[in-house]
Length: 352
Image (cartoon, rainbow, N blue to C red; front, side):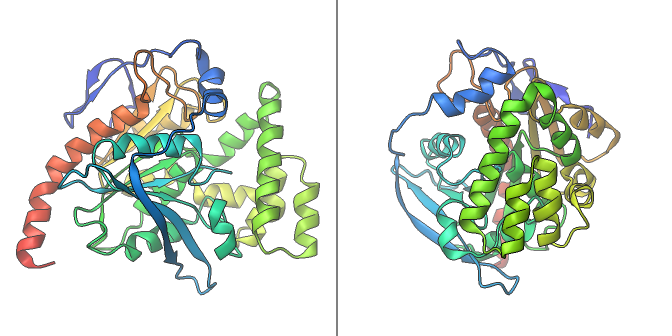
């Protein structure tokens, strides 16, 4: 993998084009790009027929994952199923998830808006809660999809923490998996550095808001002991929350061990599925330095693109109703489909 590209109307070696991003007025700069998802939502039905879909987990807990399966009103033949994985404190109804679902549905693709374990509607069918290393849960979803649901394979998109989870999965995919490619948006690929950035004085309001959301979500969904509840309620920072509850709950030796062992950046060198990683230089939550360091790895399957602007899961673009990250991922997906078509044809001829 080459040095991360600073997006500015270039064509990557793989053939897909990347257009420079111009901020959409009045959402100038990283903070406003980030906040637009909170303040400029639209309550418009998705162009689809939808119903709930569930998946069993393989860890023996009895927990299930649920999501919303969306069938486009005007399906396009030969397209992969799009699997969307939300970020921290998100769910199937997060604004960025719904808008990306809309983008792909309008292009005739079936979409699953997945809830990670214990998130959103998943609270009613799970006693546990997701974390940065829960790649096995996403694998359970891939393995739970039948040929009828994804005859042309699956393309996964992970946002923020969901992107880091996806990178962990991509590094350990079993033989015969259904994933034809993947993309991440604003993923905290070095969690310790993201934690430090979030706890900087300039991010005090973000930090308080996110910590409150994290506590509320876990206290409302996970099956907790009285001692765990006390640890969660007393946490004064994201680091303390991860150190006191997330890490011990999921078998890690504290927050530092948890961050080290789940860092998506450590997975990139072994990824074989075509993967696009998108990030913004002015993301107020996630530093760009880990993406710059990826130039030391050599992995032809992974493309890293760092935009000059976009904030955190923002990328709201001048002159376009759709986001820059959706348009860029779509160009990448079209290239992946072209490369994947001969392999799918061979598999059908072999009867697999």
